[in-house]
Amino acid sequence: MTYKAEYIWIDGTQPTARLRSKTKVLADGAEPPLWGFDGSSTNQAPGDNSDCVLRPVFSCPDPVRGGNDVLVLAEVLGIDLTPHPSNTRAALENVARKYAAAEPLFGLEQEYTFFKDGRPLGFPAGGYPAPQGFYYCGVGADEVHGRDIVEAHLDACLEAGLLISGINAEVMPGQWEFQVGPLSPLAVSDQLWTARWLLYRIAENYDVAATLDPKPVKGDWNGAGCHTNFSTKAMREGYDPIVAACEALGAKADEHVRNYGAGIENRLTGMHETAMWTEFSYGVSDRGASIRIPWQVAQDKKGYIEDRRPNANADPYVVTRLITETVCSAQL
Image (cartoon, rainbow, N blue to C red; front, side, top):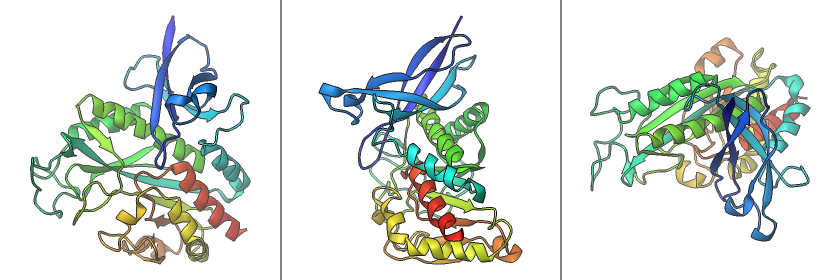
């Protein structure tokens, strides 16, 4: 007997990496091994030295194929088995190990937009829908578009054993969000990449594309982010470490914004529930700040913060590494 393993990896496309996958048929009981691929076709190697290596780092049941089949998230190595330059997971692994004692936890809010026939799902041909306002967490065919895909994706993530915390319709037609976590830096990033792959794969069945474009429609429409909720053990036990975390993030604001996803200046404009990308701020219950401290956190004097700056197309390995390193190094 055999089973199918769908190997998923992150390619070397710039400025925003893309997901790739292929299938390996394995004998029952066999563990997914190292596997190779053509890096010259994924922007990860030249044609005259094209071999790259996939090393499994996370696996889960495959809810698309079912049965004994699995999804295998893999990191990319060179043929010397060292991390490939495009491998951002390896750097996070080092940081996560270094600051494990601080017990960092993340919850990621992944926004995305469905497109069909070159326009967001729900946008009329050759025009625009009613202005945003009633679409967020809306109900009814005039306000919500793509719910069948979203429900299928949620079910698939749950069947795969991913820690999906919830879903909701977002501010623009065809725009949705799912949340992953709370989990450790590596686990939340692995699961978000896997959930992204499942989103693309399931949307295929409906002839719809899902995009992480941070500003899918120009003008008076919200962009798409990946709001990042974060805490350490100290933050979950007291308020002073929360303020210190905000101050630490402010001291390295430029470095973070530069690495929070391509096109961030188009989304962080100071409008549509964002702060300007060139400025840093934090405040209680303030969705126009760079960092929001939830009102219940200020009331309880402990909890977490929300970094509202990361784009929908941000690499979670990079985002969680930067936040972990910046905050935890300041708290030690």
